[in-house]
Image 1 (tube, rainbow, N blue to C red):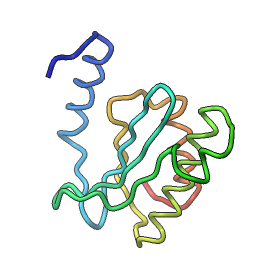
Image 2: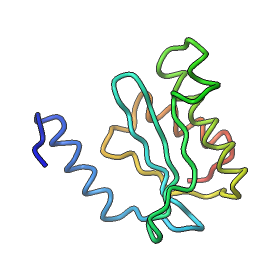
Image 3: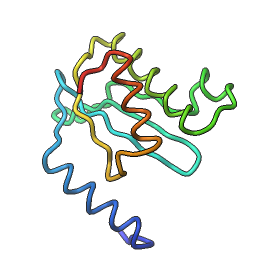
Image 4: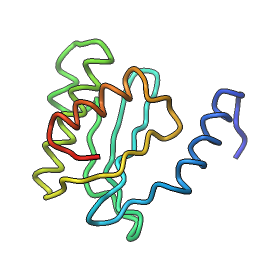
Length: 120
């Protein structure tokens, strides 16, 4: 895989370092965040079976209709993933920031998920 610039290369190396330690299971799935320039997505993944248990993103119905700034959009996604996880019977997760800094949109998503009832 050819990496285009040093910023992406740095993120991928941090991501690989994190993934050596963070592993999701069916009881405690890995909550991984993907952040693009305009959108933010989150998934709960069972790494043992290779399944995505629950997913949410800023392009989901209730969120895309609201014209809000990106940090507030991330908070809405955090609340949505917490609701979906509760419906699926998941309370504890392992947080995977996917090489991004725990700041801004990633931080607001994580805090909203915690306020929604997820424990990590």
